[in-house]
Amino acid sequence: RKEVEQDPGPFNVPEGATVAFNCTYSNSASQSFFWYRQDCRKEPKLLMSVYSSGNEDGRFTAQLNRASQYISLLIRDSKLSDSATYLCVVILPYSGAGSYQLTFGKGTKLSVIP
Amino acid sequence: NAGVTQTPKFRVLKTGQSMTLLCAQDMNHEYMYWYRQDPGMGLRLIHYSVGEGTTAKGEVPDGYNVSRLKKQNFLLGLESAAPSQTSVYFCASRPGDSLNTDTQYFGPGTRLTVL
Image (tube, rainbow over all chains, first blue to last red; front, top):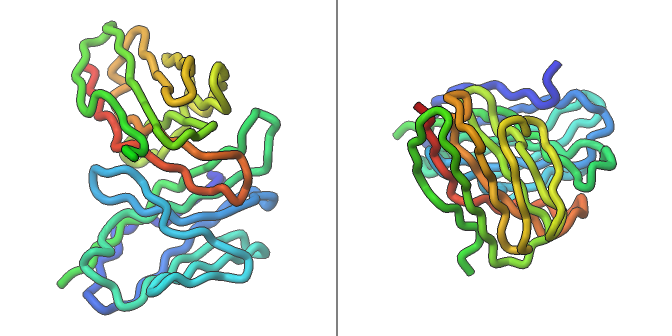
């Protein structure tokens, strides 16, 4: 089982729709979780952290389910500008290698259609 | 602040040639990373550095070397380029190693093609 798995999509949704992505992780001792956004041919950028209690930032809501080992991202009222690839990122337990390691999922592609 | 910059933006090499990719950050970050991103593979860590003068291997270090002689610069070298090293290379930096210091700042990437 891969450490971090995402549905690659693409998810094609109309403007104004609500869309949700899930990401599963294999290491139950994983420490921290994030969603990054990557636009076509651009670098990844942090979208939001994922806290145990869940967190919301405007139209975006992130949830963590430790029991089932997945995180989710919900986007409400989708905009054309939300079209991008969304990367799930997990920090694995410290391995003594000098730095926490971020493990990236392969990403879920979202296309918001007019 | 320029953030994280990468040089060059694009490069085409022939098999066996060597080159160095430069990453520079002006945020005084301790930690710096080199990733490669291939279609269907996601981002994979090549090497990283936890401070000036230190380097460590990541997930896919073979065929690459790195150096961090100055805190602000992290160099990635390809000694003898192979077609399998055709990829987009991203550099990233991070202020510290706290679990809460989560933000990695990425450079714009270098698109490398090895023929």
